[in-house]
Length: 369
Picture (spheres, rainbow, N blue to C red):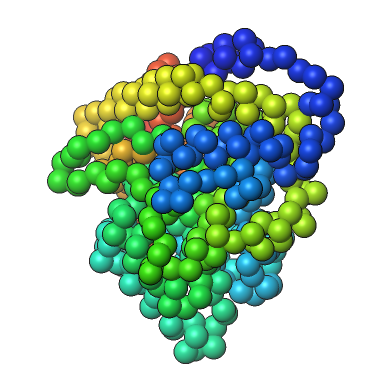
């Protein structure tokens, strides 16, 4: 999708001296924040429409996660994440803020089935009763990385109820919100439509001050180098103010601010881009799983979002990873994602066809060795 994005970016590029300065604020220009709000209002349909004042821009979601961890936790406090989880959470939650990533295990159950939402509450209660760390937040990644699925509305509602009972914040990482690329059924797994926590009315369910969303333009638009994310908190201006205090370390580039706002404000382009991107992702997903089926390689079914296939390659992960490295093919290692079972890897399929073909060939070579 980069060619399409570059054509639009180059066609609309008309810089002024303002873009060489710090704009109006290091947390994103009002124009950028309004553009993000408008796109998310159209695509995720929040129960309460977003405004620019609900948003702070950062140089990526890694910074946004770190800022939320710093703002919500004292050193030693915990943030709950369900296994498996995005491996970068360990760094972003813990490294500089000093918070703890507390894993929630599911013992072979589906991590996204509403029946296991109670596991989060069990960890909170156990930590309190046993004198463990204070749990300050639950952080789901929705759509899920690495499973490539969406949490159901019912699951999110259960998480909200738990957060309300224990005054715990719900920080939803939704960086793949516009990359939901397939609907229907996959084998016996019913695929969920994407539901943002912003789309669920908090009235009578949870204090809005406990609900926050993270989003990043870089993922849904295939441009990681743009490094532009957002902390979104319609009900908690104090959190945004706390994040603003650390924003000196995550200020948004003026050129990136201008370019991103220009693209997001072009509704016709955004609609065309998202539709084509999702269609292409669906084709690539089908291509790779057909390859896996042909070679008898198991994978987690039911994906309809994101860029990943969670794949069981049977053998010791570290040993196989070394063989992959020798063949210059990179897969995410399950242990790095908190996998509860050994042998799992994350395949990223959002690549050019010739790259996929070569990568899949090298995977077979490594397994065969």
